[in-house]
Image 1 (cartoon, rainbow, N blue to C red):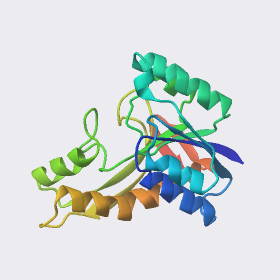
Image 2: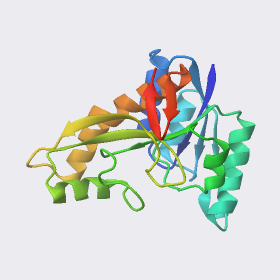
Image 3: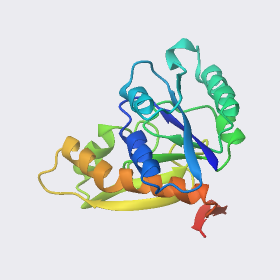
Image 4: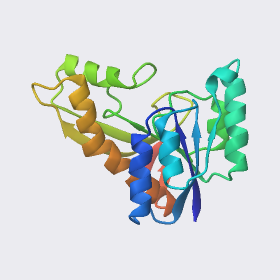
Length: 207
């Protein structure tokens, strides 16, 4: 049984999708053992508490720079004996020292079809604003391994979502979450825990 540690910064809707998948038996051979938040008082911590999942706050603002903060996160991950680290709305780009300690063992869900609308600064509503501005007919979500390149790691799963003519960024964001993010993130986590993901030459193969 692999230990899954989830990193959060806000409401925790993707965390909830993982909790629901775990409780329904969809996530095989893995269990969420700890939720770590970069901010105190966020609703994601309440979600963890409601399901008797251990949580801790490592507040970004208490650390002078991202390297010191990353070291604190790394200590916590090691303490929790994390097998898999999942970014679920975690809004801090950690220093590469964390990624190097957990190569191909950290994953993130991004609300677009990478390589579109991704990279530094592309998060939250901005992703959907840019998709609408560009007039794309399809958007979606991507689960990828985390590397030192923002949104640049090997792609695990993707799911497309239709863009409608009268969409607002908020409406599109909700559809992408419901139809894509909340579905493929638990799938990817389960595939990892079942040892069915293999990375070769920056590509992910599902066994």
